[in-house]
Image 1 (cartoon, rainbow, N blue to C red):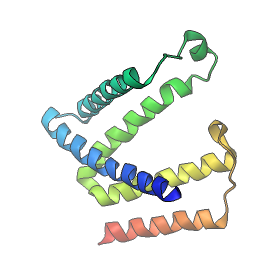
Image 2: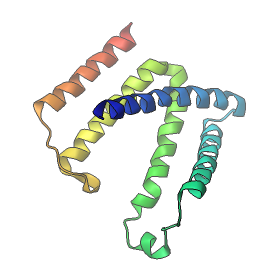
Image 3: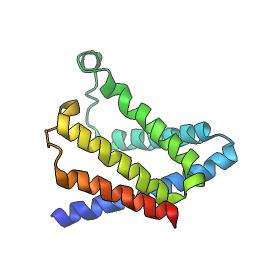
Length: 149
Protein backbone atom coordinates (compact mmCIF):
# COMPACT_ATOMS: atom_id res chain seq x y z
CA UNK A 1 0.00 0.00 0.00
CA UNK A 2 2.86 2.42 0.82
CA UNK A 3 4.20 1.92 -2.73
CA UNK A 4 0.89 3.22 -4.11
CA UNK A 5 1.20 6.34 -1.96
CA UNK A 6 4.82 6.88 -3.00
CA UNK A 7 3.98 6.48 -6.69
CA UNK A 8 0.97 8.78 -6.29
CA UNK A 9 3.17 11.40 -4.63
CA UNK A 10 5.77 11.10 -7.37
CA UNK A 11 3.13 11.51 -10.07
CA UNK A 12 1.61 14.50 -8.28
CA UNK A 13 5.08 16.02 -8.04
CA UNK A 14 5.65 15.47 -11.75
CA UNK A 15 2.59 17.58 -12.50
CA UNK A 16 4.05 20.76 -10.97
CA UNK A 17 6.86 21.39 -13.50
CA UNK A 18 4.42 20.66 -16.33
CA UNK A 19 1.94 23.14 -14.84
CA UNK A 20 4.68 25.75 -14.47
CA UNK A 21 5.87 25.29 -18.06
CA UNK A 22 2.31 25.55 -19.40
CA UNK A 23 1.53 28.64 -17.31
CA UNK A 24 4.82 30.29 -18.29
CA UNK A 25 3.94 29.70 -21.94
CA UNK A 26 0.47 31.12 -21.29
CA UNK A 27 2.05 34.26 -19.80
CA UNK A 28 3.86 34.89 -23.09
CA UNK A 29 0.47 35.03 -24.82
CA UNK A 30 -1.31 37.03 -22.13
CA UNK A 31 1.75 39.30 -21.69
CA UNK A 32 1.26 39.03 -17.93
CA UNK A 33 2.26 36.43 -15.33
CA UNK A 34 -0.63 37.65 -13.18
CA UNK A 35 -3.21 37.18 -15.92
CA UNK A 36 -1.78 33.72 -16.65
CA UNK A 37 -2.10 32.86 -12.95
CA UNK A 38 -5.67 34.15 -12.96
CA UNK A 39 -6.57 32.00 -15.97
CA UNK A 40 -4.98 28.98 -14.28
CA UNK A 41 -6.90 29.55 -11.05
CA UNK A 42 -10.19 30.16 -12.86
CA UNK A 43 -9.85 26.93 -14.83
CA UNK A 44 -8.88 25.09 -11.64
CA UNK A 45 -11.82 26.61 -9.78
CA UNK A 46 -14.20 25.55 -12.54
CA UNK A 47 -12.84 21.99 -12.56
CA UNK A 48 -13.08 21.77 -8.77
CA UNK A 49 -16.63 23.12 -8.80
CA UNK A 50 -17.65 20.41 -11.27
CA UNK A 51 -15.90 17.72 -9.19
CA UNK A 52 -17.62 19.00 -6.01
CA UNK A 53 -21.01 19.04 -7.69
CA UNK A 54 -20.62 15.38 -8.61
CA UNK A 55 -19.00 14.16 -5.39
CA UNK A 56 -20.50 16.22 -2.55
CA UNK A 57 -23.90 15.21 -1.21
CA UNK A 58 -24.05 18.39 0.84
CA UNK A 59 -22.25 21.71 1.05
CA UNK A 60 -21.15 21.80 4.70
CA UNK A 61 -19.60 25.28 4.64
CA UNK A 62 -21.69 27.76 6.62
CA UNK A 63 -21.24 31.31 7.88
CA UNK A 64 -20.94 29.86 11.40
CA UNK A 65 -18.16 27.54 10.26
CA UNK A 66 -16.35 30.45 8.61
CA UNK A 67 -16.64 32.76 11.62
CA UNK A 68 -15.65 30.11 14.18
CA UNK A 69 -12.34 29.15 12.55
CA UNK A 70 -9.12 31.09 11.99
CA UNK A 71 -9.34 33.49 9.03
CA UNK A 72 -6.14 32.17 7.46
CA UNK A 73 -7.60 28.72 6.75
CA UNK A 74 -10.08 30.34 4.36
CA UNK A 75 -7.75 32.74 2.52
CA UNK A 76 -4.25 31.47 3.20
CA UNK A 77 -4.12 28.54 0.80
CA UNK A 78 -5.43 30.45 -2.19
CA UNK A 79 -3.26 33.50 -1.50
CA UNK A 80 -0.13 31.41 -1.05
CA UNK A 81 -1.06 29.45 -4.18
CA UNK A 82 -1.13 32.70 -6.17
CA UNK A 83 2.31 33.65 -4.84
CA UNK A 84 3.76 30.21 -5.63
CA UNK A 85 2.22 29.96 -9.09
CA UNK A 86 3.12 33.49 -10.16
CA UNK A 87 6.66 33.23 -8.78
CA UNK A 88 7.14 30.00 -10.74
CA UNK A 89 5.91 31.67 -13.93
CA UNK A 90 8.39 34.52 -13.41
CA UNK A 91 11.33 32.32 -12.40
CA UNK A 92 11.11 29.43 -14.89
CA UNK A 93 12.53 31.35 -17.88
CA UNK A 94 15.44 32.60 -15.75
CA UNK A 95 16.31 29.41 -13.88
CA UNK A 96 15.04 26.56 -16.03
CA UNK A 97 12.58 23.92 -14.91
CA UNK A 98 14.95 21.57 -13.07
CA UNK A 99 16.71 24.24 -10.99
CA UNK A 100 13.41 25.97 -10.21
CA UNK A 101 11.88 22.73 -8.95
CA UNK A 102 14.96 21.98 -6.86
CA UNK A 103 14.92 25.45 -5.28
CA UNK A 104 11.18 25.40 -4.55
CA UNK A 105 11.35 21.89 -3.08
CA UNK A 106 14.24 23.00 -0.87
CA UNK A 107 12.17 25.98 0.28
CA UNK A 108 9.26 23.64 0.95
CA UNK A 109 11.49 21.34 3.02
CA UNK A 110 12.81 24.23 5.12
CA UNK A 111 9.29 25.47 5.88
CA UNK A 112 8.01 21.91 6.45
CA UNK A 113 10.75 21.30 9.03
CA UNK A 114 9.85 24.56 10.80
CA UNK A 115 6.13 23.69 10.76
CA UNK A 116 6.86 20.18 12.08
CA UNK A 117 9.27 21.35 14.78
CA UNK A 118 6.94 23.96 16.25
CA UNK A 119 3.65 22.18 15.49
CA UNK A 120 2.40 25.20 13.55
CA UNK A 121 -1.16 25.06 12.20
CA UNK A 122 -1.85 22.26 14.70
CA UNK A 123 0.22 19.62 12.88
CA UNK A 124 1.84 16.89 15.00
CA UNK A 125 5.26 17.91 16.31
CA UNK A 126 8.32 16.27 14.75
CA UNK A 127 11.43 17.90 16.18
CA UNK A 128 14.33 19.06 14.04
CA UNK A 129 17.15 16.54 14.09
CA UNK A 130 20.52 16.13 12.40
CA UNK A 131 19.17 13.84 9.69
CA UNK A 132 16.59 16.42 8.60
CA UNK A 133 19.16 19.22 8.65
CA UNK A 134 21.58 17.07 6.66
CA UNK A 135 18.85 16.42 4.10
CA UNK A 136 18.37 20.16 3.57
CA UNK A 137 22.13 20.76 3.40
CA UNK A 138 22.40 18.05 0.73
CA UNK A 139 19.58 19.75 -1.19
CA UNK A 140 21.56 23.00 -1.12
CA UNK A 141 24.51 21.02 -2.50
CA UNK A 142 22.25 19.79 -5.30
CA UNK A 143 21.14 23.36 -6.04
CA UNK A 144 24.77 24.46 -6.20
CA UNK A 145 25.66 21.65 -8.62
CA UNK A 146 22.61 22.24 -10.82
CA UNK A 147 23.18 25.97 -11.18
CA UNK A 148 26.91 25.54 -11.73
CA UNK A 149 26.71 23.05 -14.58
